[in-house]
Amino acid sequence: MIRTASRLDRIEPFYVMECAKAADAIARSPACDPALGGTPMIYLNIGEPDFTAAPAVQRAAQAAIAAGTTQYTHATGLPALRERIAGWYGTRFGIDVDPARIVVTAGASAALQLVTLALFEPGDEVLMPDPSYPCNRHFVTAAGATPRLMPATAAARFQPDAASVAAAWGPATRGVLLASPSNPTGTSIAPDEMAAIVQAVRARRGVTIVDEIYLGLSYDEAYGHSALALGDGFGGDVISINSFSKYFGMTGWRLGWMVLPPELVAPVEKLAQNLYICASSVAQHAALACFEPESLDAYEQRRTEFRRRRDFILPALNQLGLAVPVEPDGAFYVWFDCSRFSASSWDFCFDLMDRAHVALTPGRDFGPAQAERFVRLSFASSMAQLETACERLARVLR
Image 1: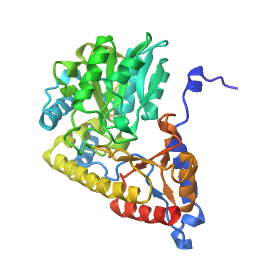
Image 2: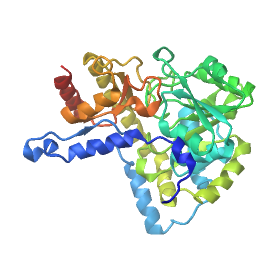
Image 3: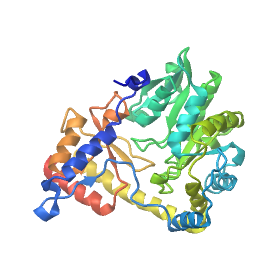
């Protein structure tokens, strides 16, 4: 038999995808076949917008292929794309970002892989909130380091603060990996608290990495700010991870970027050259059109639609007895409490898949602190699907 690397023993399955496979199996059954009187599965489990790439982006991809501009790019990305991303930070967030600090990657996943490999090694520990996106901690594990989860409560908006970071910091701690807005909670860290966290990490000679892939999908001005904008120079310490997948609707194009302190660009570039040479050249040429006025207008209309869906689903869930303790201020997730109906969020979700034909995500993926109590719902689906899903949930839960 082939012997696999021991690092695999420290990486859990991605339960979101396991649940998705179970939902697909039920969806193929007669009970979900409309021709046989069944009801189709409604998928509220996967974090993928129902909007695709903007029309101008699609045209740009076709033009790039037709023109043959499909060769390798620099490992750090097309210079023109790095300029466009920097310009977006300026117009959208009022931040002056040097394009030389931007590295274009094969999705946010590649960005996280590069930065964790560049910074962490066996014996290091990285602090992360519980709940948080599971793959982020698995990138830390794959680099040989150890993720240390800090349980976060509803009172703290399911986010860490500077006091919890200072209390959890130990001799082996190398830094923190945060997310704002967060998957699975849709909550963000307030700018003042983010600054305090970065200051606490800096005082301990650590690094702060912030997953900001949902930053464009913020609905509350109190929270919709990049950590790169922190005053007193703290923004220069932050490593920001971002993506074209969520706000820009390019999930399958596998294109992301990160903003690095200047001294980290060359080490990360060296890793990118060796690990995958460059991100997709077609996706990069297409992404230039993301910043055209036509596309930016479309993204803002979509953001308005996501807010409308959020404002529908929150009271609907609370009315069903599925309490939402903290209103999401960004992304397209709701983190709700199912304990009124079940002691196991895993059993609760599988029961609803089977009886209501509604697919949700149990809390098991996102950390052990409250895994059995909470469920993630994605409102990235259409309003019609959300309304139908709530009707089905009401019939089953009542």
